[in-house]
Structures are given as structure tokens and as C-alpha cells.
Image 1 (cartoon, rainbow, N blue to C red):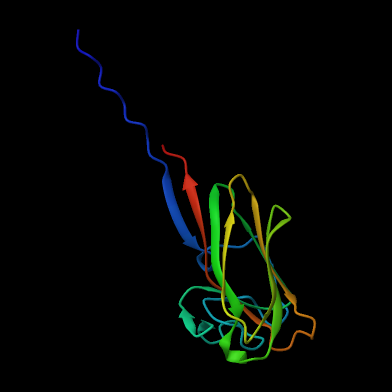
Image 2: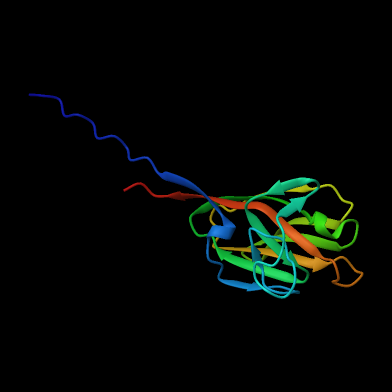
Length: 162
């Protein structure tokens, strides 16, 4: 009798998506709307400039102003990564704190970030999580010039094989 050919195990599909290409479940922003792929400008959408953090320009990301919170459904996602910093358009002004919450639990806190601070890289595990919240708080001197960028913000997700 012939030996049956083993069926190969289906390979899961791994995707990486920029958060600016996804729909959030909720968002609030201290000045104007959360900007997709731009820094915060004025009170209108798309009135900011290119995302520019610590001298590096980014085509993708989220521009915010403290206080802000953006929440995404991240069921089936494995990780979140971003570069964070105060946008270069405000020079040395602005002071914020970046926080990443996963299912309501703080997984990252930047400490005080100013316009003079170096960019910080964020990498957070999302395994088994359902909710990702990106939070920016005021650095203690008011919200003027608090243009806070989540540059290159993206999630990596695994879809089950079919």
C-alpha cells in the first residue's frame, strides 16, 4: 500500500501595519485632531508638517498634543514599536511624557521628554492583549508646544493559517 503524503502545516500570516493606516477605537487630543502622518499644527486636520523627531523625518506616524490618548484593538497582535519625541517644529519648547498601556497596564513610560531630548525607541509585547493605548501627558509646564510624535508607530500581528 502507498504511504500517504503528509499534509504540510499551514503557516500563519504575519503582517506589520502602521497605526496611521488603522482605525482607532477612540482618540482624544489636547490641540486639534490627532494627525495621521503629520505633526500637530493648528486646530484643523492635516495642518501640521512632516513628522520630525531629533532630526529624523518620518513618513508614517501619529502627531499629537498633550493631553492625548489613542486606543486601538490589538487582538491577534504580537508587538508594538515606535520612535517617540517632541516634534522638531517646536525647537527646544514643549515637555511631555509618553506612556504605552496594554489592557490598562502601563508597559512603557518615557519619563520627561522635551524638545531638546533625544528620540526614544519603544518596543512593547502585545501577546494575548486586546487593547493598546498611546498616552501623552503634559510635562508639568502646561500644554503649549507639546507636539508629541509617535513616529513610525506600528504593530505586528499574526493571523492564523487557513
